[in-house]
Amino acid sequence: MTASANYQRMIGARNVVRDRLHTLEAQLRYQAERAVRSPAAHRGDSGWRKCDEAIYQDVLARLQHTHRKDLGALRAKLGRQQAAIRAHLARLGTVPLT
Image 1 (cartoon, rainbow, N blue to C red):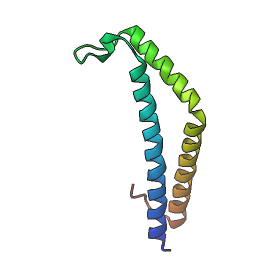
Image 2: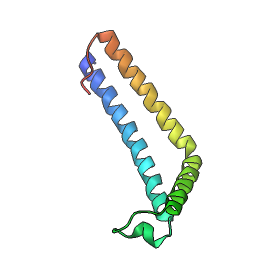
Image 3: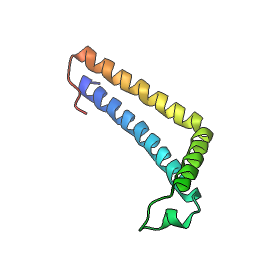
Image 4: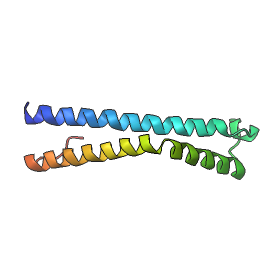
């Protein structure tokens, strides 16, 4: 496998993990939004009240705590992949493309 092909494989794997992490985080934010039962929170013409934001933040924190193992594993894997990409580029002495 050439250096360029190896680099592209590493970038592709990193992007898949990053997308999985972003998807999980987005799902948790969506679930937290749905947990807010205030009519003001779901009207398009008005913003959330302070108590709505507090409920949202509380529910989001609970969901993140519930999924902490999944989030932690994805973040750790993403960090390892980023470190591997940086090391690969340092060995080659090149500037990253992405």
